Length: 359
Image (cartoon, rainbow, N blue to C red; front, side, top):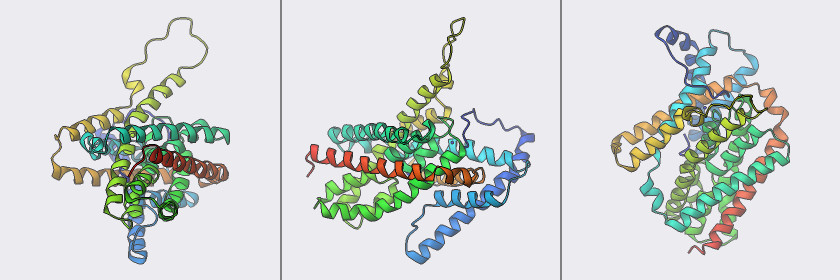
């Protein structure tokens, strides 16, 4: 998964009783079959073209959605699909926290660290504004803004359960963002060359604009090791913003649900577990554990692989829950918002680079 839950209801984790586990098996098998097809197709991509141009997460959604257009999952399969689409992805978000350490983030220096956080926040606001200006629904505008500003597919998937996003919205946001993410990897080196950027400046530009860590490496390694190191560090700072952004959105969503006519009696306070989803707390605790060196180094790759597997399974479930016709109906506006949001992000990134006068 991108270094940086389904369909859309942000409910507590499904309580799985011993008798309920068996009911999940058919859906889990269906999701696993779609995920295996996605992994196989990406391996074929690598063999034919030397690299995987379409991320396995996107492939899982596309394959699942294609199957959904010709096959409606029966009632026996739905519990496992719903469990995979929400709970497995929430667990993956928790594991993502282990991919970020405070020491690594602070290595880039306070000025660039603060500037990167500022770019993320400004990009969130600008992208959301563009989405609303082009009449996208609130939740879709939030999904695209988070994917654009933070870490593409992973941010969209992580934010979805926090804001109660619909499955169709999540699929559409990921699909359009993924396509543009590949285009950025291909075109960004041309922009760097046209601007005659140094390796450091180009690395920072890539870290601020490219969606996924693997894509950052693909965009920077041809330029040089310095560009790749700078890009990866900046990208990690953007990933780090996922936790605070999800936390803020959880609070805003909780209060949006409470909006309405004033009650006759004072409303009770909002409980912490309603404001902050359990998996966001887990993400922050895992990040803290990584920063305090409480997670053995040999365990980190295992956690990363587990997060990847769970996310691919979740995205397969999301695809199996998605009506492709609903996605197609809003395609033009979503594409326009994604492109304009990315252009705004590139502009903010360049402004920061020249404002800090990086070498």
